[in-house]
Length: 75
Image 1 (cartoon, helix red, strand yellow):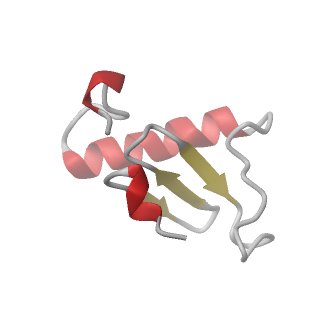
Image 2 (cartoon, helix red, strand yellow):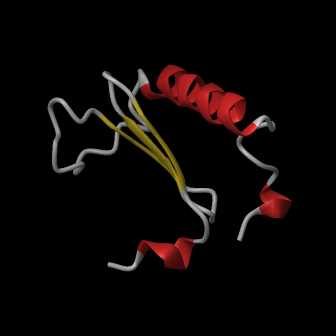
């Protein structure tokens, strides 16, 4: 699958999981310790909202911009 069709991507990984932001605004969150194949997207799970906020803050700090970008700037 060619993931570049979704536009520029951003990603963050730490000891808890892997966050992916696609250029079309889609977000995914995986617990790579229990789901190495990244099949179970946790972004909509009950604990997913807090994790998404944490990863968004990581991306925002790394890029020095607000994150996620406004929908008008997405591809």
